[in-house]
Image (cartoon, rainbow, N blue to C red; front, top):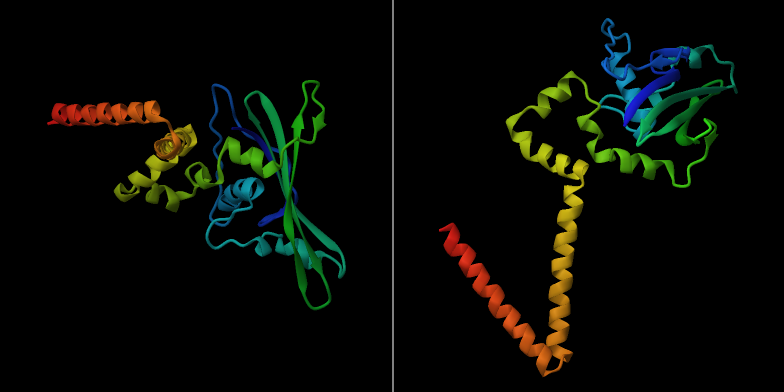
Length: 232
């Protein structure tokens, strides 16, 4: 996943629609966001995680995502939009995702509407089209939700990541990202299927099949003993 740009509207501290924030890529692919405390650096990070996964870091809730000034200045009964739009590339395809929610202001209260995710994919001619799969499924294949915390994190989170007791957690996350865990599960499932098939064959197979299974079991046991002796 290569992030191209992000655009916000009434998200947290960002009042109204912001200019498109283009992110650096290519040889000079580092973008530095500099700002005072409370200026919105963490909110910008949350804009990425909320836009892609609907997730926010601790202390943030979706109901608090709509800009307070936008709500205060809205007339009763008017809808206050809040959205994040992210453009990214993956495997030579360009995607545009937008997650949006709304707040409705009445005389005495504010009603928040749950967010929705919308995605478009660029065709070869540059025109946008709807994807054939659900947006959540596409994003999940590119960067699974369970792994996003290792790519989008604040200063406190990086201290937790480098802790010694987190090595096993990071190792498992790396396996999942590389697809190793899928292969491990496939190996386990194939082993279980093989054992189940052999059990059935011992019950319903003819004498020749039972003889072959017995020989296989013998050779397998000898192989395990040989490996054990080699290790010792």
